[in-house]
Image (cartoon, rainbow, N blue to C red; front, side, top):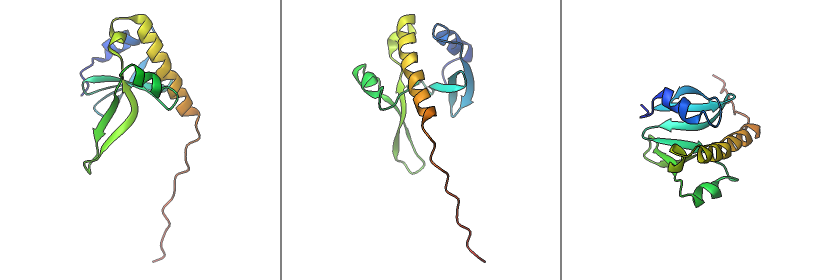
Length: 123
């Protein structure tokens, strides 16, 4: 379970927007207007990134969230650790949360690939 209390997360992001939380994996997804833009998982808070915003996160030293798959492979997600300054500075929080929300909106706008159906084999 996430080390972050849900009430704390709502209060933390209040300067940026009214957020809602949903249980996700071993923590919480953080949503604005129904769009997930952050994750509170394990011992960290992670913000959504994409090809446009990744250089900004790289410049800030914000490492990606990684996890091991069942096969033991390491997978890197599109979420980056929230810069520490966001915990103490509302302007920094608004700045980085805004970047993450914009990335999430861009991700939502992309067409989703069609799901392949398994071909049925005759008996």
